[in-house]
Amino acid sequence: MNEFQFGDKIRHILNQGLSLDSRKAARLQAARELALARKRPEPVGVVASAGVWVGNMVGDFGGWTGLSLRLLAPIAMLLIGFGAIYTWQQNQRAAEVEEIDAQLLTGDLPIDAYLDRGFQNYLKTRAAEE
Amino acid sequence: MASRSELSAFLESVERRAFKQAVFAVRDEEAALDIVQDAMLRLAEKYGHRPAEELPLLFHRIVQNAIRDWFRRQKVRSLWTTLLSSLSPGRGEDDEQDPLETLQAADGSNTQEAPAEQLERAQVLEIIEQELARLPARQREAFVMRYWEELDVAETARVMGCSEGSVKTHCSRAAHALAAALRARGITL
Image 1 (cartoon, each protein chain N blue to C red):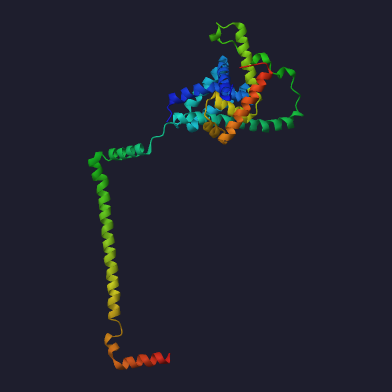
Image 2 (tube, rainbow over the protein chains, first blue to last red):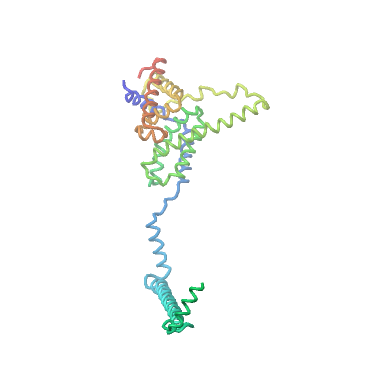
């Protein structure tokens, strides 16, 4: 008799000894019922819960028509507002850059000074002294 | 995901074997009942949402852990009992368990069987249970899970937290030791 046959015979004999007296059987049954009572509630799936959330949102806003008016319209206005602010900021920045450029171009030193020979001599002697 | 009825059917199908396994391990029926109850509660509370086919492995693992927890608690308790025993009067002989109390009542379904055969069968069963309880814990766990719970080698290895080779070794040694012990007591299967 190999190990498997031996194990099989032992299993048959052990299964015959599974009958318990009524007290132990009742105790096991009570334990089982207690365990079933404490079973975790079945979790709702993520997709299903997202669907429920969207449904609730739509329902809260009075259906899809109400949703477009009460939720989508403010969102659209907000997006338009952000766009307007961004454009205004870009224009402001461009205007500042333009102003700086203009100040550089129309600075204290007239651009004709760089064409003046005497001024160039002055710059050379100044550089040599330094 | 296991439904309530699936979980109930599963627990009903395994509770008695789990009880017997716990009795083999701890040799105390009340403690074994507590262990099975704890294991059922843990399974339902923590793993009740898992698919029904995962429940057997999880439950066996929980039962084995519950048995180990019981031994740990006993260790701590016995330490305190030893420390405090000198302060309390010794227990009388009345506390000792009467072996007659543990005898199984005759099963009603076996009324057609001759009393002598019933007695012989009950004796063989009792001897097998005694010899199983005498096996080293790991060998007994492996043998019972493989041949009584009918888990395969891989599943048993997962429950026991060891390699498949170890499971085979434990099973083989348990089978040989059990067969030798039964032979020594004059039982041939």
